[in-house]
Length: 429
Image 1 (cartoon, rainbow, N blue to C red):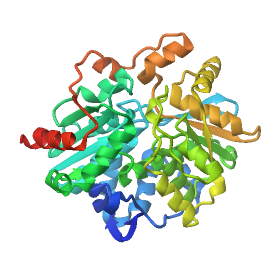
Image 2: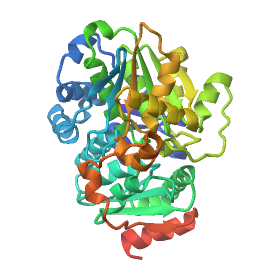
Image 3: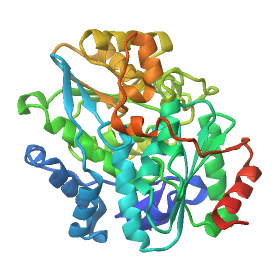
Image 4: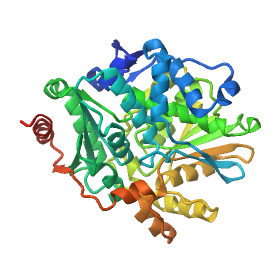
């Protein structure tokens, strides 16, 4: 599999190199120039999830990973389901939160951990990533206990829910967490700066495990096929998919699935008040505003890192830009959507509620609508209980960590302070 740096075409790498490096020169994203396309989609959709995922990933990655190796990786990573749950007659939720950390990022995080462990073959690696919530838990649990791999996770102090925080800050061992006194965009910038610093990048063998890393992105393609596979054949022809969008890796994966032949007619990029992309799609002007805090904090991102990959697919003619629209859902309508879903007997959290509201604004009577449920409602227990006025029970993974001590260091949004902390923590200097 050949991947190219979107900022420098001469920076061409293999899948293994892209997984190990994470980012290319000038903080460029690695991405294929083209994708395979399946001719008989229904035959592919008739296969079981793991078998189908192996076929999809083999077609993407090629011979770089032997099929048996890739099968073992997928079988170890995808050990939970992604059920398509009917909410109304023509509206479904794709529930992506049945993994160990109750969020969609378990798919990409676990696949990346298994790939990197296979590719690194015992070489020391430091995973450095930023999280606005769910990435941290997924990455921490996916890599916890893996030999020769240290993980450092930056997150914005006071801007994620306590239960989200406890899921990844209580593990210890090879998992190191840092609370940054700023927002998520600042955390992302610190990560980018570290990757541009050769002392840190080479001295600590840096790798990024957020949706920048192409292995996570490719894993996410698989559950879009799983969503359509769960629809009756006669309902697969006109599907509208609404994706709650923060850093835009999830939407990128869906659009890759479309390029590969999956019959999705239209995508909605559903954001909260951090609406850079919906405004851009309407005006053609890229004008990020300062990030604002919302109920849907995992989407509090004003400068989404994965957007260049979507633009690359459109610019190269792999997709027509008309298949994508954007919608911003404010705090009031987020809560309205949560209550509307509850009235239909479906308890949801703010991120999925935004996708649902955006879907209902565009869905036609003769269409099938799917919105992505990216996190278990209990991960946002306080918000959900306040909005719905009803208690939410804790699933076991959250109950297990609720009483544990947070092990995070606290730092200002200052790169030199972070650099000193990294070397002191990982090399004892």
